[in-house]
Length: 397
Ligand SMILES: [Zn+2]
Image 1 (tube, rainbow, N blue to C red):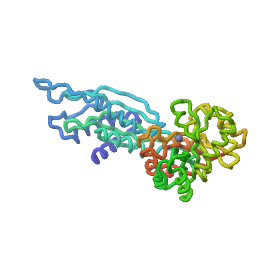
Image 2: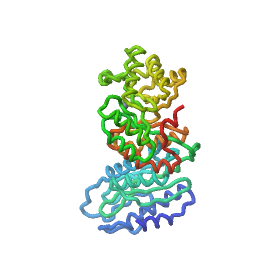
Image 3: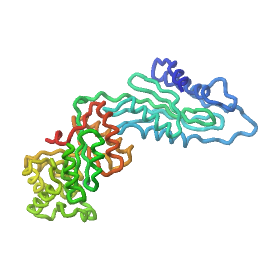
Image 4: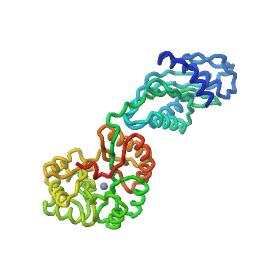
């Protein structure tokens, strides 16, 4: 690999096009120079023309189609780009070598603001390698990095994709970007607090009232310096979910007095909460009467309300403004897809939003298998990009 990298550095482009052609020659040559060919190889490899069969024989070998493998490598590599990246195909042509057939494609990738070029190309290469690919060349160019990747076949590496990754735009409000993360649905297990503490950064825990450990978890979280929200069940559009609201649920058929009593009882069940956010609520938060009744209690208790934004028709912001209640709203759901890769992508989206807007709020779940671990793993990456994790109460207006 070192030899390949050295070889690629020798290409001295005068323009991108010339360089691309130059790389093609270098890469094609490297593919032969570095492999362990079992068949005789041609003395010279043309840059952009299909290579004729090295040893035409009486019995023509069966055609080997490498394209499925090549396509898999290209797809995996692009999937590994940070969320918010844009890419396009700049060119693609069929290639053949002896009995081998595949396509060579060229891509151009634009990273989103806040992305890190090194990290992005690193994860792209890793994903390609995990898919059985080989890095043939990696070379800095004006404003980015060009990678050439290949697949191995019969001891040779055949180039299947070239990716030009443009550097991300410089963040406008990079300094002082802040994100708050809230982990919802807590209260089933005391260990949910341990998982939050292992993140080693301020994360806010939203506890459902009436679960086996709601009260004790709220108490321990406060002692450990972790902010707690009352995660208030509110009626969703979906009637099958509405049946799960429980005794602390706010329903749209309740009077304002009943709603007030329910919210107060729920606050007693999660003692010491610094704010309230809605669990479900796609129906109830769209109803200004219901929201008003909830927010009046929130104001009386000197708390704030985080709108989880489970519906685009939420009236929380408008009603809160009228009543003078402090609010924030959710920008990104972190773990609707709970896989670590998906959570990582959403955390990066959250950071990019914060870099653009100054701050952003992410909501995940205390009981999903990977969310706290991914946050712990990514906290340093966010900080390197100038994004601080802060308690939600600092982002409430
Ligand atoms: Zn919830």
